[in-house]
Image (cartoon, rainbow, N blue to C red; front, side, top):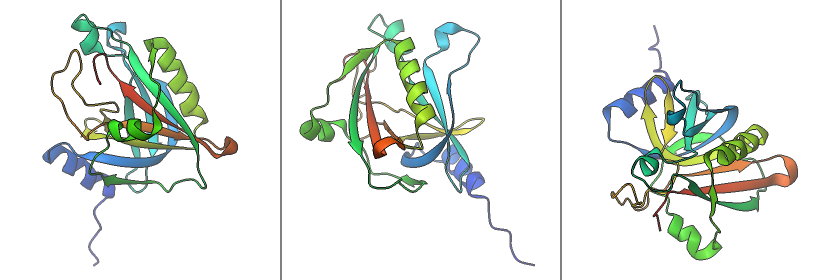
Length: 195
């Protein structure tokens, strides 16, 4: 009798739960895009993008639309967002891989992105609209496993007004790919006080 191959999703779930946080690069097909749901409106601070990422199944991407830590510490809770537009020759293949790091400063040195402040509601609306039109999503962030598998820390990890921990080369980002004119948008997210 041949041995049954372990399920890729189960193996990934176990690796996440038993190892230090992994920084990863994921490309998937958007399956669902929704604003976070919670009975307490004070806790609503994410947009969830669920991606199909074979052979791992569905992964939830949690994107901050405000900073509760900044708000609770008396700082500006709004997110600064830069959107870099480009075109692509063909849709990227889906997949998940551990990644050595992602650093906004390298992009900022060459692209000179302009960051704009977004209120929670406006950023939620923008991400819902873009996510629903996207045919692929590319994400850099940290894996987590709870009742589902997902990625979070999709933002700059440099020290901020509310968080003194200064992580370099661990910045998270989100890129949406659209069918129209092979356009793509890379989103960079920063909290109050981040360089």
